[in-house]
Amino acid sequence: MTTSSTVTPIDTLASKGRGPETHRRVYNTVADLIADPDNPTPMIRLSERFNAARDFDIYVKLERNNPFGSIKDRTALYLLNGTKLEEGQVLTEPTAGNTGIALAALANARGTPIELALPDGTPEEKKALLRFLGAELLEVEDELCPLFPTEGARGVVKSLVESEAFNGRYVSPNQYENALNVEAHYRTTGPEIWRQTEGRVEYFFAAFGTCGTITGVGRYLKEQNPNVKIIGIEPKLRHHKLSGIQKISNLPDEHKPKILDYSLIDEIIEVTDDEAFGAGIEVARTEGLMVGPTTGALLHAARLTGVDGTGTAVVISPDDATKYISSYAAYLAEKD
Image (cartoon, helix red, strand yellow):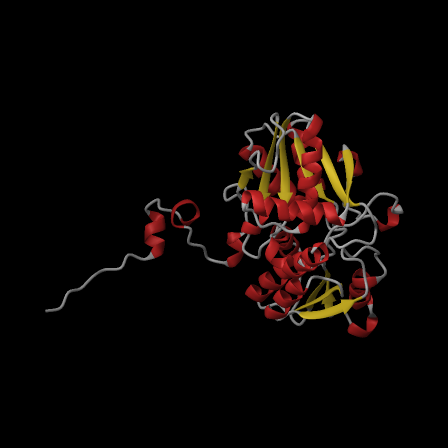
């Protein structure tokens, strides 16, 4: 005896009102998985086990939930969509790791070759992911967040793009100067935070890196409420162990990311490596949140602010601990 069955095509299901965006979570491309206001990354409120301040709530926005594991997925999507590539051209970009990972994955999905310049001190986990994705890596001596426009990783990419010898073969979105880096967060991360807190956010903490996040989110939040405090976090020392962030204070203007809008920043807090790694480990052991040391730096600063502050704070967690296990292991070994 045989039976027959009819399989309803996915498109038919969607046409009946069971759309992929909200119900079945079926998507056409990997880029569709990247967060936006209709599909936001989650936020979690920290308990008194980590945050003892009774009148200062700290919410952590978990950007690791993006498909390639970081907030830079948003940036990479906007940058790539705004970059025109002709047949035979190669995408190239300086990166501290996360932007490169996201660009490489998105480029693979489009069949676009990619070469990335990154600091030789970039965590091995990030390098491994980039090699896994098949990206060509150009490792150079540089700060952990590429800093100088004509030196290190940024200088290498500038030479590739501008060299007559390559005859226009290389194209760079240039995340340090591209307004799309800001727009990605103005149109997605900022609105998500405003909606998720129901407009109650009073403090926003982000690190200085390429400065797209702090500028885009800061601009959006201040348009909704000019009293929102935008607090930038930087390493206490120029030479540090916090991948992807940089010390902005006292930098000549020509070395600061051109997309940074300094007028949005209400306060800058310096954090040491020890404070950043310590807070990252503490939040894992008290809340079960496995975050990277940059998140640790932001959490340390937020908790300091909460000693005398009141209200609702949102901390960006750019990625997670899995990209820094070797760094955490080295830190813990030093403490033993």
